[in-house]
Length: 429
Image (cartoon, rainbow, N blue to C red):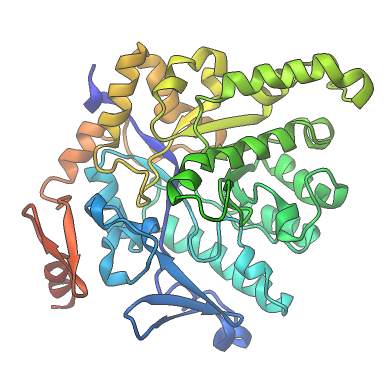
């Protein structure tokens, strides 16, 4: 067995929403008020909605760019690989990267839909959010059956409507709901408030995983205003650690015993210490804090309710049995700056070889856990033999994955292949 025999399903990728997103799903009543893309004077493409301007940030769409061109400046669609925003081009990039399946978090609405929640007109916000969810399920995921794990945006401002939307989406085969890592920072009741109970019940009833992405609270861990950006990037997983602690000690797993959470892009190497700290905290303090897990330890609760997700985590793979093999799942993070696309399979393979992970255990982490957690079966649409890294790359033979430098509104070739301008010219011919 080698890397070509792996089957890869990523539980954390991203899409850059195309300008046509709301063309077919918004109500006529709200068509003029729906989010729109406009080109700014500096050449950036930005979304506008509810008086706000939301740019596409460079780090969110750097697949195929040289690392020296990474940055946080606003960007435009003609500065990105089409696979960022075009589903058919995304499939080509997935095949070239050996990735069978993908779950795609949103971009401009925020990971938890907070841009929509901020609208004063809640009827408009609700219509826009439902339109987004329908586009994601029907057009993005529907554009390539069996290749995407569908995900819904939550109705943050109304837990009853949120529960209703979960049930509506579940009827369409959606078993993932993106949610904030800390609702309190967004001005909503915390995880410790029963305000959210209708939503938790709907997720439990419909077997929907709450997929919690770092940064979805609108805040990232920083040490000081003048700290280098490297500090913030290094500490990003701490947001997920905080969310995990909040949820484990909350009433949610006690009141909703089959609810499940995925901690997206948080990594796994820190989990064994975190579990040890949970149990020691319980042992030393539960008699006076009143915590009671019905005979379980907090680490048992974590392993029952949480999946941990990682991009490249050699330490986590070494500690996989302390974390729990059932609780680990791989992610690619395309087209973000942490992604190793198109060589993510090699990155995972090398880390697994270094950690002595048997092939059967690696398959569990690379795709089996994702299928089980999200009720996702890509093999309804294609055989396992056609789903391996090697088979998918063979299918993508000739697809350009070269590193390309952006210059004056278009990509230029730096290592051969076809430029985006050439592709666009062929598409419009």
